[in-house]
Amino acid sequence: MESACQLSESDAHRRLRVLLEQGLPLTPRPWQVLAERCGLEEAEVMACVRRWQEETLIKRLGLVVRHRRLGIDANAMVVWNVPDDQVARVGQSLAQESVVTLCYRRPRRLPEWPFNLFCMIHGVQREQVLAQLELLVHRHGLAEIDHQVLFSQHAYRQCGGRYAPRRSDEHPGA
Image (cartoon, rainbow, N blue to C red):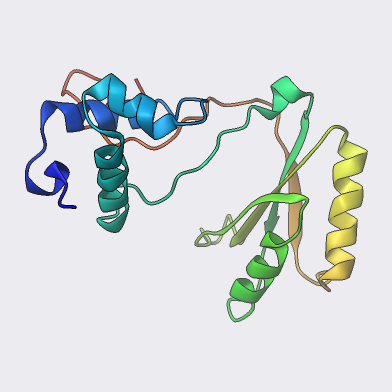
């Protein structure tokens, strides 16, 4: 099925992009709801999203969890200074751990910031998070890898992807 989003972008497709920024509706048929809201068919919405993923306009669909509302206040970003030849392996193994909710590599910013691997551990209490970290260090043989634990002090506003072009008078994230 050749989607209209492949040929030219209509007002309905622009509305779909704006609606996707707000997140999927919490309903058994979110694509149908989006279709109704922007004047498209459900199959066309799904085809457009698939096409936008192929074109990397949408790189991934994810979930934003408001952990503090759930009572999960002991949130720690563990930053690691992993040798470059080991960082992919270590990152992949940490990402497989159920207590690691986010794991990614970033370039070092030397000399001030030597860390190149970041992983997030969420918990109800700091002691719990530190105990989980200790198990990870032991299980993955990371005792010799320099790392720091950075507990969050503030919950910043989280938002999903931005797909619709902004007007020049709008601020990013508005």
